[in-house]
Amino acid sequence: MEDLVKQEKIILTVIMIIEDLVQDWELNLDEAISQETFLVNDLNFSSVDIIQLCVALEQNYERKLGFHELLMEDGKYVGDLSIQQISVFLESKLKNQ
Amino acid sequence: MTTRTLFIGMDGATFTVLNDLVAKSGEGPVMPFMAKIFDKGVRGVLRSTPNPLTPPAWVSLMTGRNPGNHGIFDFIRAEERGNDVFFTLYDSRDCKAEMLWSIASRQGKRVAALNFPFTAPPPKNLKGFMLPGFIPWRHLRRNSAPEDLYDRLKTIPDFNPKELAWDFEQEKQALDELTNEDRENWVRYHLPREKQWFCIADYLLREESPDLMAVMFDGVDKLQHQAWLFVDPNLQTGELSEYHLRMRKLCHDYFRQLDSFIEHLVTTAGPDVQVFMASDHGFTSTTEVVRINSYLHEKGYLEWKDVPDTEAGKRREDSMFAYLDWEKTIAYCRTPSSNGINIRVARNPGEAGIKPSDYETVRARLISDLEELKDPITGERIITEIHTREEVFPGASMEDAADLLLVLRDFGFVSIKNKKPVVELRAEIAGTHHPDGVFLAYGRGIKQGVVTEKCDIVDVGATLLYSLGLEVPSDLEGKVPHSIFNEDYLSEHPIVIGTPTNKHVKDNESARIEDDEKEKIMEQLRLLGYME
Image (cartoon, helix red, strand yellow):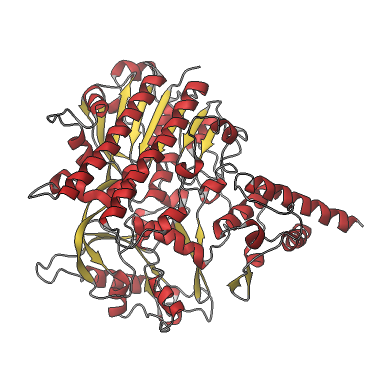
């Protein structure tokens, strides 16, 4: 139960930071940003935008989070990420630190 | 409250051009207010960082420390990881020395810093306003401070963040070699862009009167990279085409506008303000391409990787990133802007590279081989200076610097392309960085009509703190140049050396950049002339 609450809190934090990030981007979103939202496919993120999101999350949690572990898979960069994936990654990182 | 200190940065400004623009001609000088500052203030050459490049130089100006101490050496930080090299973007968190914005803020001074590179994300202790440079418009809000600044700026008539910020997409469209029309548009693009920065500076100056108002105009550098042929007074000889004359007039329009912005800011700041102006480096002509990795290949230090004959392979070859066989490469140049050579040292068993015990021997042989690169006709050395990092980048971050720093005979940036010949004349003269930038001072307590001795870029940070009435931290390498202030002012305001800065050495690791993004950045750098 405690874990679920923590996960929910992380998802809300990620959504809040992304909403703040994209507020001036003039995106025409059909649906509100949720854990199912993908950064590239739904929000038109470029690589620089992903870097800036990583910086924003690290600033929020006031620690290094080693995002390369999330961004790279088998030596290659992942094509897209959902908010759910980011939240799960953050939960594991925050648990271990 | 009144603004005590006004700092105007002009990226790449050089006296080679400014002297021409303040000269009286038939229609009067192109920059009449700059002419007044020449007459009523102090000016002198400002020596840039050992590699006169925007990132290390502006950060040295803002910290009063050399790159070996602040740790910013290039646009892109590269890390060797096994058999590949990963590239990351530097940001303010990578800077290991405290910037003057923080030093002034924690002593109660309100500062405004506009368009300075590597100021994003802003420092937490900032007292004042910050809108960083080199940030895409979509991230200006998040990287501005305080939180409500961005919304306030939106109330400025004609405020347009897309016009203000670096536009990756626009620059992506630029070709390796610009057509005449593209080059003309490139210069035109910077006229409204600079106006955006001016309007923000003017707004904050009028509304907030920060103790230190600082704004950087980077169009000078961008214009000179692409239009040096039309700006350098030494190149205006012979019969000039209609296009050439039109471009020269357009460049003068840019400088005329910049002059009016400077005059407006100085006037708005009031008669008691001290005004300082500086560039991060100067400018000069580059006449040849030096393909340094091709030379290292010839000498057996570097092995290229085979590029497949496919679309992807072609893109890879054009990507401007050295595509090397890391198993067989022991020395290479990572980025053209670094003008440096990295030696691969095997730190752990099984790693590629030379043994640590062979480092001195290999480096000495490499230096000797680089000295041997000579003009076949005149016998003149192509690489006139070769510095070890201990010589030019001493400090806590020296290990992050390239092992050797090269200075070419025409001050150009090297090419890292796999092409021949190693040295080739450029089809057309281009602009490149020169170590001698500019430093000017004007206003209360400043001498009049004086040309001062050469200052160092790290002196500017110390001078701005002094001008704010603050002590100069004892660990700054920069010194306040006495010669620019008059005697009365110096006796009323003695220079006091105070406690050291608050260092904030962090092990932050920026997120890595994928190939696509590297490409965008490299296209920008290519456009700015750092690439062949």
